[in-house]
Length: 168
Image (cartoon, rainbow, N blue to C red):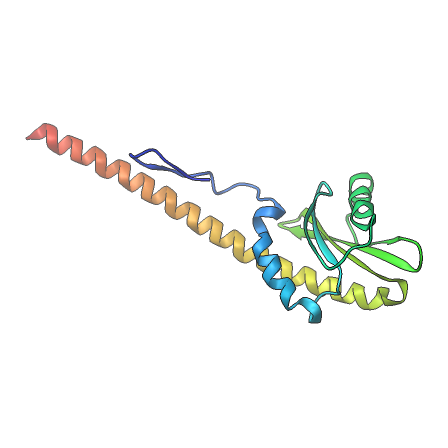
């Protein structure tokens, strides 16, 4: 978060690694989930690269999110992964990659007979997430660069003002 001390706004470094929480904001995922039936199935979640649930949509059976978290922690899947969850249920984990790094996972809970369909939906969801992350990242870079330019311009103007005051 940027801070203001009355003299200037301190700007965070902007050319850095961003987390999935920063690239896919919960409010954006919430808005997406309202119309997601055509894109994603009824139960999907975005998890961090450490397995923490960042956002979950749908009504989840006990233990499903925990199973996803454990699979991420212990396996660190780098490709689509299917996990049997008993009673003809399956959990699909899709790595969410951005700039060649796994930022997190899209988890889908579905019936085993829906696996092929849900794999297709998961891939479509990943493409949407990648576009959202790209746009968010571009916005953050542009905003950060603007903040640094303003900060430098202010410092230069302040220095010129002090030099002018001394010369008078």
